[in-house]
Image (cartoon, rainbow, N blue to C red):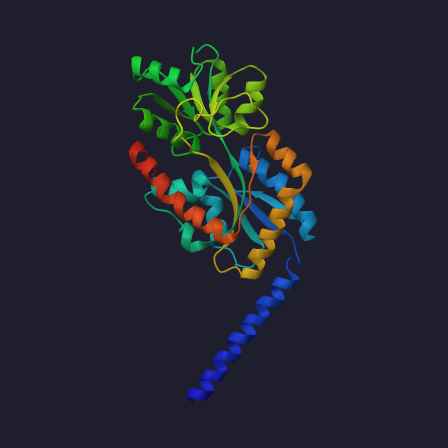
Length: 322
């Protein structure tokens, strides 16, 4: 009986392995849904569509972008976490829903490290300190000096409580010991509108959202966390005397946990090729993003390190979302 049970177990395991191998070889045989856990038109959506178009060509099947906003990215991420692990439902995750929210929300519908199979980074986006032109701030040092001279009088906007824009500003506040008033909005766009209009004085924005308005002269760029090819004249925070300030926003593709490794590797290889395509690279770079890929193992370790890194920032800020 023991021998028969052992043979049945090994046979079943072999059949399962063959099935997964066959599935991976034929993958994909139907359209792939790429969930974007934010509204259409935002940075995450733009990156998803830029890379998704090239992935469709490489994989031979449509990659359909599905916007599922809500709860700071948690709604869309959770949809994929609970999807079948077959490679047909993937999500473009960002630092918020896959690192910050793990501490920001008292109860999460998923566990990033348990419920997802990281596939690859696709881009990192520097944060840019931008100000209304009426504010006489030309460097991060100017901002710190002004904020310390007038504590609690400067106002900064964000895309909402706990977003990367909010947490990036809180990181700078904690580093420098300054006090500024946070005004949360429902997205970067309305915050940027009020910054341009003078209702806000400054914002630590992702470069993609800020660059068009900087180029038009509506706002002024003060410093950026990493050099942006689209605006090489803007100095970095390191050059400005703040080398440890680096709250870079990142975006990457995740599949549900349990997705066969062959499928994860096929997706990873396709993403790497997509990011090497000239049109994709130029499109991302022109938006202030830096095309970046890595292996599934490297991406897993990257995310594992990001969660405690942002946990410190969230706790220091006192930010909470019920």
